[in-house]
Length: 514
Image: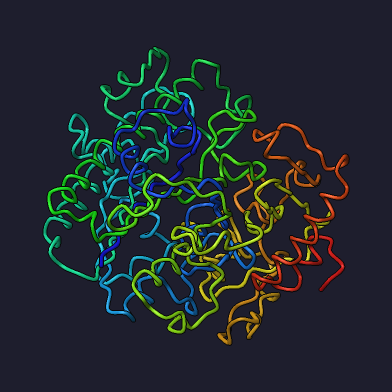
């Protein structure tokens, strides 16, 4: 038995034809959909990138306890669980966040792994010799402008194209092997939306303005983007989706040639979505937890095309991937040393269960708390002080920085009150000692770098949306539906209990229960 997880970054499901008839034609993904079970009500739990991956790797919702960070010392991961059942794991990715501060211990859990260099901020090319960056709209990180010189003019050298090619080569080499798990993770369509010109032509892009390939994490107005620039960024995003799909075909060719569909489980999903003008927002992280970021695609191909073409309405989340793979390989849940929040999806696909959960909880650490029952989405605001709030960790790292005691002053400061940090067995679900870092000990930057401390104005308003009549989440019905609001409040409290939330979360979220 073999399994493959294809994890593309930042996929907005409204651009996919299998979820939206107006979406782009992606031949390989559409073929996969024809051979797969498609999940209609699938959600991210923790966001953004590394929190979402920790959810997948551990089968647990982790945004209740900390922000962007590593696999913790007390975590028990998917590759480790599969290894207990004799399954060999391999990762191929160009997601460079795994290899910088704040992304520790993810790839190291696999039996083997490969990294393709060059995406975004990846410091793979020296900037000793200065290069001129052209005038542009939006964002442009100098490091990336240097990196892209490695593949300029040769689309097969683009990082995501290399990831797919390496995955196809690995499958070709191991097509006659059994009991393996292959994690294939292209960074695309994550920004920057950098593609060869021919793909822009294929999606009908006619933009003639300044270079514009990398949206800032701002509203359209704050970013100074006109309609033409926004339309161009959407076309670039579509082009990147299309290019990734083209190279996915290389993996499918190997699977076709060796009849691997007959005994291989294939999962396609994303870590989170991405906003491209919806609600006048670009990107992610700083806006409410709208569907475009948290309601994500999931397709699962079962061996021998079982249940191909079926669609499932039941609520599911990416934390369900770990227990699904464990059941597929016949590995007992008892091998996991930590409680798992996820549920196997095999009973849903085999028609043995109608649902695996009543609700799905999701969000960012220290921000609004969000929940859906499949019909409604409810966003609950914290109290005015957003306190008490603690970060629990064994590793004092954040994205690209340490929570470093030696760096408690100056521009790179992360810890402003180290005397408030304590250690102990603070998490009720594990005896492992952790650091307890109060929000009061962490500096609040004006630029919002540590957004779990500083709240935006919109976060002080509860929101309720009816997805059946208002999927775009344009009309907040929080005041007109008191019975639904009360039901969702009770559901949220139940979800906090089920997911081992620290007690202070109830207080922060204005619940009486502690």
